[in-house]
Length: 121
Ligand SMILES: [Zn+2]
Image 1 (cartoon, protein in one colour):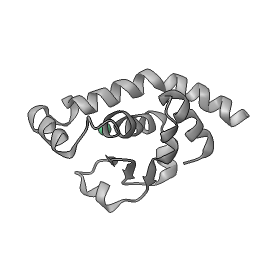
Image 2 (cartoon, protein in one colour):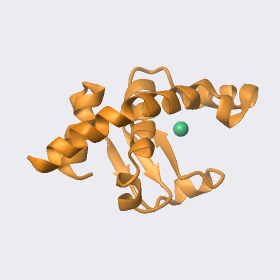
Image 3 (cartoon, protein in one colour):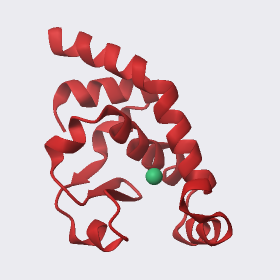
């Protein structure tokens, strides 16, 4: 991940461990997941496509980092928990997904502002 993006992530999540999240592009594993653009695991984001397309989409970045830093890291998200939620409510209404979407929507403006500052510095 480009340095300005990492710095902006650390700022909006108030969490330096954002720098340690591993992002893997062109992951066959992510592609296997029903054509989803990305999937997450503890400490990592697996992208079906290219890293630049990911970086170019701030809401997508915030959404995936939210899963890793706010859900996997504190142990709230587990594979089993996610599966159960998905079975119960489907993909979109799943509470992990709605939380990540709400977080991304609420944070994107601030993230972009910090990012713009970082890129100027
Ligand atoms: Zn998600």
